[in-house]
Length: 192
Image (cartoon, rainbow, N blue to C red; front, side):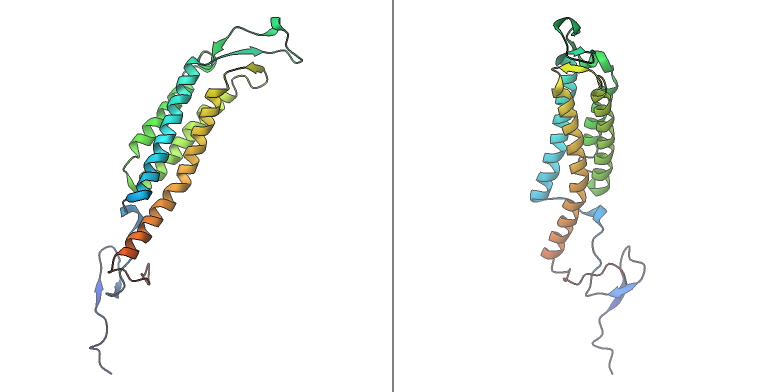
């Protein structure tokens, strides 16, 4: 038996052991960069979260509503003066929504780990802003002013969707890169 037909065995970069040179290790997901339609989805969802957070903050500052604290039906004399949500809850929702925008901008071109961490942090900040805004008049009758709460909820929902979408986009991009690269056969190895 001759060893002349045996594949070359060598050590490759980050992989600690030896491997068959014909089978290349898969690219680490943290080093994959998005391109094409996947990059478009990545940017579109990120800017949708930023837009919803900015509109929610604007509506909290400008959208007026009235409150009735009576337990039954509210007469005209039971309604309070029209006011904004900002006058009820203070600055915390604005700080949280500004944090959402800052986190989305910070994770813009940071790869998979940066995208997932910024989406997770933005979702947590948005849920705090949503909780504060939604619980401002929890057991009261409210006339008007629902747009800020709705947009804050939409900001939270989009951040959660982004948290799910980021790994899907990066895994799909890695598969597309390996499919188009002749050095990567279909039987690429992850570990030996």
